[in-house]
Amino acid sequence: MDGFIAVDWGTTNRRVYLIADGAVIETERDDRGVASKPDFRAEINAIRGRFGNRPIVMAGMVGSSIGWHEAPYVAAPAGLGDLAAQCPRLDDRVYIVPGVSRIDATGPDVMRGEEVQLLGAAEAGLVPPDALLIQPGTHCKWAELRAGRIARFTTAMTGELFAMLGRESILAPQMSGQVTTGDAFIAGVDAGLERDLSAALFGVRARGLLGLLPADDAPSYVSGLLIGAEISARFAEYEGALVHILADPHLGALYAAAIRQAGRDAAEVDSRAAFVCGIDRIESLL
Amino acid sequence: MDGFIAVDWGTTNRRVYLIADGAVIETERDDRGVASKPDFRAEINAIRGRFGNRPIVMAGMVGSSIGWHEAPYVAAPAGLGDLAAQCPRLDDRVYIVPGVSRIDATGPDVMRGEEVQLLGAAEAGLVPPDALLIQPGTHCKWAELRAGRIARFTTAMTGELFAMLGRESILAPQMSGQVTTGDAFIAGVDAGLERDLSAALFGVRARGLLGLLPADDAPSYVSGLLIGAEISARFAEYEGALVHILADPHLGALYAAAIRQAGRDAAEVDSRAAFVCGIDRIESLL
Image (tube, rainbow over all chains, first blue to last red; front, side, top):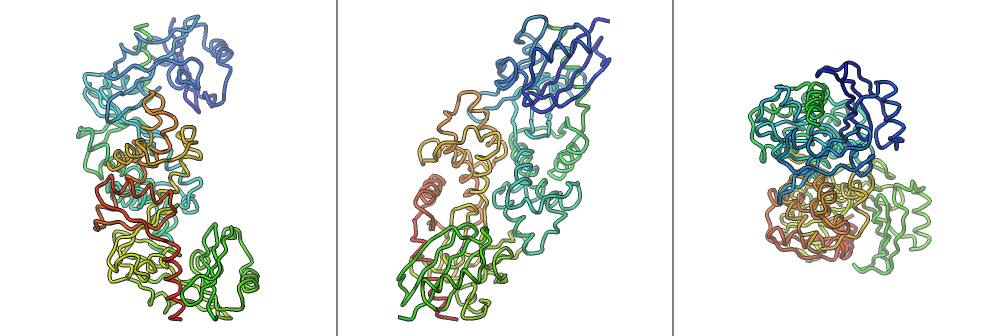
């Protein structure tokens, strides 16, 4: 077995894979994201201690200005070949996959890490080469693939807004409960589709004071509001009857329910398989 | 001179007026808002020590669940007479002006404190009896007056969102500068009118990373985005070629610029004179 080591090195978390012949032999996940300010050289040595002295291909925030070595963005449209062709090579068979930028008048945007998963989904045949994909999370990515390349994309900071509102806004006292895909969430989605976020959010406070929204329902309603407003704006920009979702099951179910409520269909995609296929293809092109 | 003492007692600040024959004889402002958990009885005694043993009429968060004595909301449509008729009277000639609620299917909302200023503006002849008024701030109120009464209103938590984003979001490092009504603000307003907030906010980060937005411009651009999205949604709900603004000069100028950019006219109104006229009228009806 030869194989290589892939590292999905984000802000908070890090996942390491030992990959050979396209298959994951071994994997581990920890919280040594770049925000924990790791000693990158020492970490690389430790990873090779555990997974063997193999080539290492890294993606994610490790290539950002707060990471180890800044990898410039590749401008969309971008495919796996474009990324492989522009991977900075650090010494000793260590590569960093670049991010992707969108530079146009209406929607300048950047991604770093998500591109491997997005392009890998098409490479693995999990989505068609022309498809609309989303990656919900702190910063949700919406990406349009054309012929297996990222044609354009948009990031919405919906997850971050939800976390901020729950942490310290006037709504925080109402938002300690769990988010579920029930009636309150769907009512929030319907309201969110109006794209009147600043007022609709205060309306959650007012509904609470007026006894019109049970306290347990507020988190689901707010989540629905934010996601509804996000998808309404994106549906105005991106076509695609079917939205492919790369997410953990909880967040994936929320977005799927909201997307269906807004009149399109949704299908969940195995995001780990997509990442592995994408990084394996990049490694084969280096 | 008989006169009375009016207290505009908010969450953070408190302003006390000695009013006689409709005129302010003396006033003071401090930071003993209800959030500072004052001893209300002792404060009333102290105020009377300074301003005389006169009737006291209070408005604002002092009448909320986090204040001294909860004054129920009066449902819109509501005028000064409705408020005066439903002022809880505490012992010893101390009154609390109730807030106003909007209870309908589309926009349940509440206000507490703003109603005196809004209705006082019409009472004083500063705005017509049929008018669209706004009170920018942490929670911006939009109110439609009909025949001098608050017919309906909407609160947008635009100021709170701006503060949250500046304090701890991914945009925080870009947002230490001042907000001005220059080109960056107007560009933000134009983008905000699209009502695509979650993505437009991340776009500020992307524009920064891609060198498309000077760091000094980010606070103005973000302010424009939030205000633009707010007024776009309100313009869809409220008619009125002229928007009357009750605000401090800085915030008033921002909203006036945004409103004009969005195609309506704006006029600033003396919010202190409005409050004094409103509370004086309420006192005369007690």
